[in-house]
Amino acid sequence: MPSADKSNAPGVHHFIPIFYTKRWASGHPRMLTRFTRWPSGNFAVDRKAPRGVGYERDGYAFDGFSGEQAAAIELELMKPKDHRASQILRRLESDGTGGSWSNDERYDWTWFIVSLLVRGPEDVRSAKVNISQEWAIPNERMEARYQSVIRKFPGVAAPPSLRDYIASMDGNYGNRLGMKIMAHMTDHHAISTLIANMHWGVRTIREGRQLLTSDRPVRLQFPLRSETSFLTLPLGPRRIFVAAKSLRGLNQLLNGDPHMLVERNNRCVVRQARQFVFAADDSEKDWVAKHLAKEAQPGFFDFIQGTGAGSTNLRR
Image 1 (cartoon, rainbow, N blue to C red):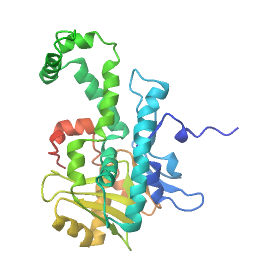
Image 2 (cartoon, rainbow, N blue to C red):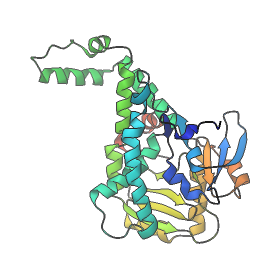
Image 3 (spheres, rainbow, N blue to C red):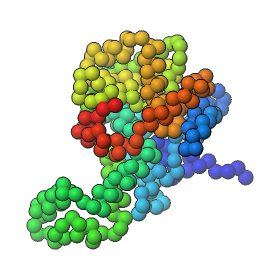
Image 4 (tube, rainbow, N blue to C red):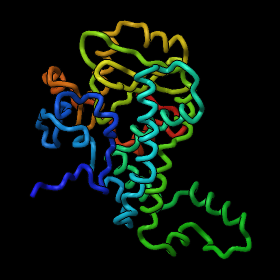
């Protein structure tokens, strides 16, 4: 009897969605090349189906959740929004960024970009740790917020302090709260608004090196409020989404040396990768082995604590 396909199980969390990675797949059956830097330090290359890469079993299973509850964030939040983003990606491939875009369409695509910053295994783990630790030892800001809330409802019996309130809850409450906050992080309002209001474009790379992608595929130039800020996201081996705060910046990305754009983009998304790089073939094997995860980024919650990203003052 064949073994079950664990990459298609209900508890699987595809932190790099199938609709995205399949752009690098070819042949029959359609496969892509995966480069991996294992925790041991060993480097490996293999061919995988898109559904067999970029996933983690029970990735969103915060303590205190099991079964359908643990899978809810994937099935009820990520899956429908990924579906809308996949529709936008097809539009970008066929028509670029031309034509009329509704606010919903721009935010559907912006959501996908932001989600790639917060949905990886390291991001989820750092969310669990940071949120649960904060909840276990509430700070003055949290206590002040609690006091403000209970003052608004003077007729409702409530514990006198946040610590007392936490003590009255079961031990997994902080982790369950963390799961909800993780869902909201994919809609990070400040960052999403800045990206949605950038100038957008799509560029086709017609010859030379192909574009690579990774488990950290978004290239960001910070701070996002700066006139020189921009971001890129490879859409396939020969196509890349670009966005910039200024029209001048966008034109540089769309009309500059294509070979330089590919070189710099590949270098960034490969060096900042945590573990995996994806390609159409293995022609970049030696180059990827040299650069993979050399500047691996921490989990998003750790990252924003060190850079002030909560106020969109990120730097790289």
